[in-house]
Image (cartoon, rainbow, N blue to C red):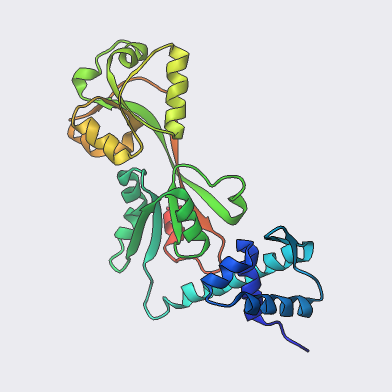
Length: 287
């Protein structure tokens, strides 16, 4: 029986994802004719065409779609094997964690506390935007990604989003700024520090619209670490979960206003399905 040539399959997968033979040939340092020969050999082995040419683009046929699905699973399994076995020489490899660059540092520390309590445990923490972090998770470069929103519905099939915490969002600032009889008065008169483009911001915008208040936003920031610093510097009243300002609240330099905003922020740990999860993950996801 003639076996499948995995070099042919790899080249097909690269072209299928790129959709352009020339660019793939340049990236792999092959001639275009050599790459075409490899793909034709795979088509001959399968007995079916894998691509239709539409203009300058290569479009997968139905057989090509099926072949690509198998190819992705085959090479993902190979990547998983390498990622697992590369840590075989040590007792436990470092847990590779990705976190949104805007995520509360205090939340990240709380998530990692059980791991840090283990003398032999170690971790690698990488910050960035959601898309590259999830791509690194998909390719098994990361073990888990911490975020405030689950992956989009289009990407959800590849990932599992674990809800690990949910925090009530409040108003936090110097005690002298919080002495109002109503939430409406506070929002109408005090300078506010508000996170941008997030579930918190969506809830805040809905709140001020409902109260018919035009807030004085003195700082519109996308980094919870900066929200914390600005609140600590008494620039204004911060709209944030209490975990962001936990140290300042404990020290009494910042207090929380006694008003319910009816806004919550959720924290997720996103993982990818794999046969060999890092041994520390279960304890972090289910403390």
